[in-house]
Every structure is written in structure tokens, then in C-alpha cells.
Length: 345
Ligand SMILES: Nc1ncnc2c1ncn2[C@@H]1O[C@H](COP(=O)(O)OP(=O)(O)OP(=O)(O)O)[C@@H](O)[C@H]1O
Image (tube, rainbow, N blue to C red; front, side):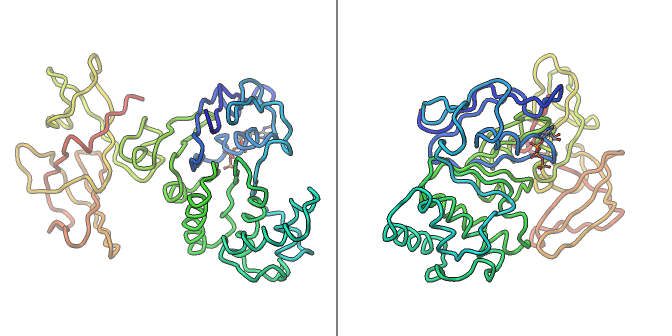
């Protein structure tokens, strides 16, 4: 297979397992984001792919060859880490040309490649500027360009945008994704920012405690979370306890949610329902009864907080579709089956 494969990769530090039996296949040209809470093993996994850490067991395979024991500098990688490590005393062009210079590439070819890359990162004509005179975002682009100078097989980035302010960071996410698509380079980015992951990735890999909990497209992760951890970690969600009736149908507070079945043999479970999928209506025999406890109007969206006999639920709507409710109102909650995800774990 062309691309990267992680086969049962485990990393232990003494008795502590930082990465636990990770299995992942990254087809050539894919953009993958490793996402998860602090300490879940993202950086350790990236460092093993980079050859900076050796797996305790398992294999790393690139384009069909086992590279587990190959040193970093022979892996054909481009890397950008949080501390960009640009050479402050060199110009933009000298920084970008550095990987070619140490390989003894001819001056003319170096210059040509630098110009190509400067166009690619939207900084044409910047070759002679000192890097310490650049803005944060410009420096970030130079670090990215330098990592791409030798057209690597794999592009690895660890929290590359975390030092930037929110606005610039969002712009750079779009830029990085567009650049990756233009070059078709297999890219793996570590981030703890789910918006960033959703913006850039073909595949989001959600990790917790050293394990992959789900690896799927952003929309699938959001719409069909594999378990409770993923449902709760990605976006915000409502977790509702459900019980099976005699026909196996899910019920909330005694009301059947038509079309949602619990797996055979399971009498209780939790369902995840996104706030934008909670619809409010007038109370009736087919709705779940709730009371409005708080309304937060954020301009673009309105959050309606509800109490469903002790369970807190949030419904999000836009001003246009805003239900006419006030704090203290009794309302009916309607859940359509396609928005309810039954979580077994
Ligand atoms: N060299 C090491 N020796 C011992 N423990 C380590 C070492 N490197 C990492 N760890 C531990 O392994 C776990 C995973 O660390 P890692 O840096 O991969 O997490 P992370 O998901 O990247 O977290 P963050 O988002 O905070 O950077 C942590 O509990 C960390 O303390």
C-alpha cells in the first residue's frame, strides 16, 4: 500500500503505556489530525512516526517498507514543531534553502526551489528578509516551507499553529489545508483543538489514554461518535439515559423514541443527541416533557437550556427558527431517530 501504516504500535515509558497497540492506515495524500486531551499520547505517536522515539513493540510501514528501525534523517520527512526552530540569524531564503545546502545542491537550484516555495506560501519576494523581522504567521509559513523544501514523503506537524492568535490561526488552518491539497502530500498533524482538526483533516484520529477511540472523517466523528468519550469530546452533546421497552425500543422518561432500538440484550444505554437536533414543540403525549430553565441568545445562535425531570439538555437554534419560549415554560422535546446515537461504551 502507498501511504503510512501503524501496525500494533505500543510505547511504554517504564511501566507506563503512553501509546497502546495503535493500528492505523493512512493512505497516500491523506491529511490526518491526531486529536485528544493533554497526555493522551498524540506527540509520542508522532515522535515514533518521525523516528525520534522507538516503539516498544509494533511496526511503522511507509510505502510498503518497514521503517521502524530507520533513523529520522533517512525517513524522507518534513517536520514542523511548535517551537519552529528557524535559524534567527539567517534570511527567509537561507532558512528555506537550508535542507538543500546541507545536501550540497547547486546554488541556482536552491534559489529556484526557494522562489517556488515562497510563491506557494504567499510570500513572494521575501527571500532576503531576516526571519526575525517577520510576523508570527509569516514565520509559521517559512517553517512550513522549509519542511517542504526536499519534497518529503511525509509531512509531520506538532501543534504547529498553537502560538498564533485565534484569527490568524484559523486563517493558517485553511492555508495549510489548501497547501496540502495542492501538493497531495501525506500529512499528520497533532492538535488538541477540535475545530482545527475538523477544518483540516480528511481523517480525525481521536485518542484517549494512549488508544485510538475512533478514526473517521470529521463529519462521521461528529454525527456517529463511536463511544461516549468521542461524543462528549467532539463538539457539545446531550447524553440521555435510555431504557429498552419490551420491544427493545429506546425510551426516555417513559416516552418511546420511535425508530431507535437498543441492541438485543441491552436494557439500558446512553444516547447522544447534538444540541441542534433537539427540537422543541408544544407538550403532548408523544413528546418528552421539559421545562425551560435558561435562554442564552448569542446573536447567531440561541441556546435553550431545559430540565427533563432532572436531566439537563441544551437545544440550539438560529434566530430564524427560534421557538417562542420563555424561561419557566413547559415544552415538549422531539427527537427524530436519525439524530440519536446509541452509545454502548
Ligand atoms: N520521555 C518520557 N518519559 C516518560 N513519560 C513520558 C515521556 N514522554 C511522554 N510521556 C508520558 O506519556 C504520556 C503521553 O504524552 P504525550 O506527550 O504523547 O501526550 P500528548 O497527547 O501529546 O499531550 P499534550 O497535548 O499535553 O502535548 C504522558 O502521560 C506523558 O507524561
